[in-house]
Every structure is written in structure tokens, then in C-alpha cells.
Length: 308
Length: 321
Image 1 (cartoon, chains in turn cyan, purple):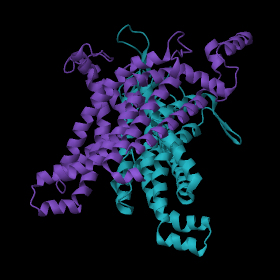
Image 2 (spheres, one colour):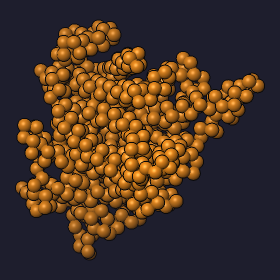
Image 3 (cartoon, chains in turn purple, yellow):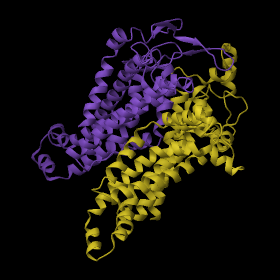
């Protein structure tokens, strides 16, 4: 259960981001602070110092001070990286969790419908899964993100602005639906042959009631096992999209956008790119371990393609 | 068997067709995306826009526009970029393909060696400390985002240590196969980076399969017959567990060759199909996107079909189902 403790600590730390920014770092991590100064060893220092290397053009942000203010240094715009890291964690965790939730719920509904009713409905849904499955995952996500980021989503009553976090959440949820729905459909198919379902059908219980009372409780363990794995996959996908600057949009931060910020500072101020990556790896490992132990506890047979 | 293969081929063509329609709808028919405006450039007058629409057939009904595009892509193969005027889509993709292929094949060799090696090592040392140790490394490897690992590799090899320990590491980029030594040297770290993730996955899959195979009745029978542990491990447990790895490999390889290695290519500056897709997405070069995404799906669909056929060949029950 060490993984749960680690996850809780990370979530807690990220939730405290506003407190950290306000009382420890004393900065606003969403506002550029190019001309600002900070105190290091009792002396006032500029956050962006003139570059001394090469041609001496441009400026280099301050490195880690290991103190409250600019603990991990600043990025190219003079913003506190540690504070952005905590805020970024909120965004990344939120997107991971929300997309996993949407994905698992939609996949469960589709898997239940396809597996239980069979026939034409099943055929159409299965072909749709095939279609999404036939795209390389990241390529589909990137394609959708490029188009939807400029136009937003406008589907009747659903109106989502171009910069909204809902765009990456929905994209990530959509691309992973077949990965969850397909095995669930298979489970429902084999459940349908079992005596207790056949008995319920024979007695004349309504379909919806059978699905709710008999089928759903039996596929629930599998869904619970998939959930932490999907959160991990969702976080990794979010960070990849944000790294390509087609995920979370500025001034908001996520671990992926901070890695992207750190790209131009890689050789100068490596801490900017290292810190969010390390957080991402720790969180992903913890989620995968959690998934493993949930699986061992609930259902040792289910396994998800792409994550082990 | 032949009937199964033919059925699978037909399904493959259908899926490819559906994908082409879907990609077409995403990129050419999404509200707010106007191909004519992309071709004519910024601030074009309505008269110019109308002229462009006419010249490119964009004022015709949607199904015709779709068919025109498909004809240019597959039959005449003279579809040109909207951004770099005169750049033909098909030859550009074919030119980028060897770079991606070099990256993916090299990485695949490495991840199969490391993944299978450590999977077998862990499964054969169940109960000792080696098993959890190897599996933990695998878990960490599969949790590291490949692009971030690539950046860290660049940080170590291209920065301060570049003048001392890593002075033999060439700058980022790609060198053709005509110079094999430089080719391998330029691709060494991209290979290792891409392979780490998949080696982790394969090691864990193979170990899980082998552990369950070692509990099977046929292994007990083999032991009862007095076969050596080594023979049981390789000839019985390993061979049966390999099925899962083979099907996983087909899918991963197909999608990587198709352009899923995009992030690795971007980080290491390799001008492959992934990079091409990425640059064309960035400047919304619609024909190029259409071409690269079709190319990618083509490989995934082929890989899917190949895996199914191999499975049917190995397991006769699948053929009838």
C-alpha cells in the first residue's frame, strides 16, 4: 500500500499549490516576472540575468535557490518553477483522472450494450472500436488536438472553448475507449451464457434490470482494475500532448508544459525539465503498482493491452 | 485457411476506407478549417479564394472532393502540399520512411533482446530476489515518458559531459545507411530510448505468461517425464508464452513504423515519418496530414491483420470463430 501513500502525498502537495505560492514562494506563478528580483543569501538578485555564455545576448533565468522563493529556479519568463510544478500537478492529475473516468464510464456503457444486445448494435459498435483501434493512439490524439484546439468543440448544446481543459480530457477519453470497451464486451458476452443470466431472461426480467443487477456487478471488478491504469495512461498522454504544445494551453501549467518550457533551457537550467518528468514517473509508477495490487485483490485474470 | 485470409483482407480494406473517410472529415470538413484559405495564404481576397476553390475542385460536392483527393493520393500520386508549393506528398513520405524504419527496427531488436531476456530471467527465478528486482526495473522503464527520457539522454550526452566521456556521441540528426558506422552511431541513443519503454512492457508480459504456463498441467507432465528444468523452461513454458509476445509485437511494430515514434523523432531531430506528420500538423498542411495518417493506419491495419492470420495459423479454433 506504499503506492497509495505516495499518491496521496502527491495529490495533497498539488492541492496545496495556492498555499505554497502565496505563503512560501510569495509569487504568482502565472504572471511573467521578467524584471523581478529575489533575495539569495541576503543579497538582491535579478530573476533573469544577462547571459554570460556565448554572444552574451538574451538572458538566463535564475537556477535553483533551494529556498522558499525560486526553490527550483525560474523559467524563461521568470516564473517560479516549483510553484508551477505544484499547479501543473493539479492540472495533470485532473486531466488523467477525469479522462479515465469518462473513458471507463462510456466504455462500460458501450461494452454492456454491445455484449448484451449483440446483433446489429454489436456489429456497429465493434466496427467503430476497430476504426479507432486502427489509428496509432498518439497520432489520433495529436490529430484531434491540432484541429480542436483552434476550433473548440461545438456539438449542439455542447460548447467548449478552444483553450478549455475539456478538450484534452475528451480527446484522451475517446482514444482509449476501445481499449477498455473491447475486453468488457468480451466479458459480457461470456456472462450472457451463464445460467443465472439465462434464468433471469427466462423468468422475464426486463433487460435494463438484468444489466444493472446481474451483469454490471460482475464486470465492475474489471472496471475498477482498469481505472488506475487508465489514469496513468491519461497522464502520460496529456503530458505528451502538452509537450508538443497542443495539450494544456498557457498560462495554465501542466507537467507536460513545464517539460516543454524546460526544453529551451535544457543545457542551462536542467532542473526545469527534470523536476516535472520525475514527478510524472513517480506518479505513473505508483498508479501502475496500485493497479497491480487492485488486480491481484479483485481479479487476477484481467489485463489491459498496452499497459501491464 | 485461405477463406479466413481472404475475409481478413476484405475487412482490412473496409477499415482502411473508413479511416480515410474519417481523416478526411476531421481535417477537411471540420467547421473552421477552410482548405482554400490554407492554399491561398493569409489575407487572400474573396476573388482569389473563389478562384482557388474552382481550381482545386473545392466548390464541388463533398463526396466528389473526397474522391478527387483519394485519386490524387493513390492513383495519380501527384497530391501536392498546400504549404511548400510543389512538394509532392507521396514521394516525401517515401523519403522519410527509411529514417523511421531504421529507428524502429534497431529499437525493436534491442527491446526484444532485453525484454525477453529479463522476462525469462524473472520467471525462472520466481521466489528469489531477482524476480521482483527485474520486474521493478521493468515497471519504472515502462512508466518513463519516452520523450522525457530522450531529453535526459540528450542532457547527459550533449551537454557538459560531451567534451569528456561522451565526446564520441555525434550531434543530433540522421545519417543515411550509406555510411553504416555513422548511421548506427547517430541512432544508438534513440534506439536505447525507444527500446526502454517496450522492453519494460515485454518483460512484464512475458513473465506473467510464463509464470502461468509453468503452473500448467503439461509442465507437470514434462517434469514427471524427467525432463531437465532448462528444457521445460525453454521448450515448453517459453514457447507457449511467446504467442502473446508475438501478437503484441506485431501491433507495436506496425504502429511505430507508421509514425508513433513521433515524439522520439522530434526529441532526437530525426527526419522520419513521425517528424513529417508533426510538422505538417503544425502548419496544418492538410494533404500531407492526410498522406501521413493514411500511411500510419495502413501499417497498423496490416499489422492487425498479420497478427490475426498468424494466430489463426497457430490456433485452428480462431479460423471457425
